Length: 114
Image 1 (cartoon, helix red, strand yellow):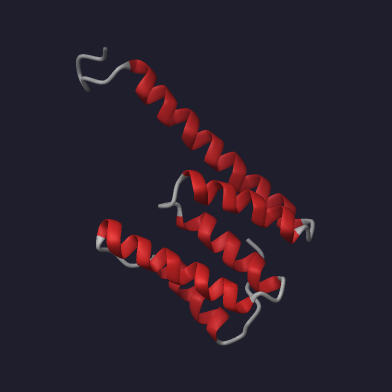
Image 2: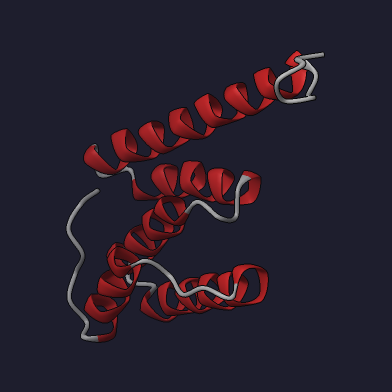
């Protein structure tokens, strides 16, 4: 047990490994998107979303892929689920970057690649 934090060393290690795993999922999603494999990219972003619902970048990745795949309404629903989740859990709004992507999608503009 770490006397300074009162936590077992493995709790901190688990959090560190989870963060590395989520970062890797996001990089894989970005890589697939760059190769125009939008369904593959979306699966990596969605997996990251499932593991950490607070990670807005994963939500944005899914939204971008949905929009580029012609699933505009689904992209809007993804944003609204994020907005509702953050409001319920943190009494917070999505980030400026997430709101900007939402506005682009509302206007029917294709988003930039990640």
